[in-house]
Picture 1: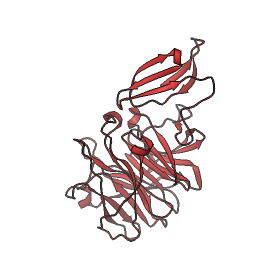
Picture 2: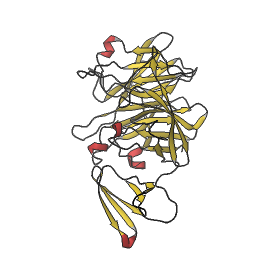
Picture 3: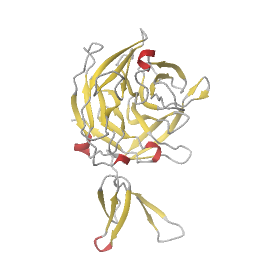
Length: 346
């Protein structure tokens, strides 16, 4: 919801953006109590706003408003985050295929505002290229690793790809899955990317099960740059009792201690309504001593639904800093809002 001062009806003045629940459908003013209420269809909530002559904001340094400086630098569908090297107030971000051609955003965070300040175009052989980007990480020697999610639907055929992009945005290498693996996972494939500290191995979170794999078990894929081979680790998913719901991974990030954090979520919330949302969790896994083919043990780090009222469906981005963790939701190309959240380390 947006508030305007209409003292001069011919020149309304923007006062504030007011974040509501999902899909606000009704609004009610109660002047005698100085209140404004909204009713929100998709999550069944009611928001209360109190008018004040003092400067106030519904946003905060840990829950900033994400915006761009103007129409020349639009953003949408944030699906991956990573901290800018040595700068915890700056993040790199990538959009999915709602934005084309593909690009890497830079976001600067100050007080209660996160501003998209730059977009690095991604090119291949000198031409703009479009991927369904779902993750970004820094390559320790320089440049970026990005992942693009595959699709086997008619007219949208595309492979799952791990790509190296240099600092100029130029694609230097595209790495697909081996043929036998590529045929076992297409849509709901690559969803996040991270490296080991040395940059010799790249890890990719796969969202849903490979064909033929056990139910409720997904893979974390490992690409060895020296041997140019893929290995896999198995990750056990939480289960949900909601009919026609599924659970999968949507991000992986290396923490400061060398372990890895994954975002595990269901497909409820957002436009599906929040009543059935159950799983919006962050788990920690260690790959240090794991053998390829092993089933990983996981430890709960955060439950964003119960602890932070995270009811947006697509929590798809996690950036690690020394101070804590940044999260962002995918707004599905403008269908939903983009929510950002910072959780300090405990």
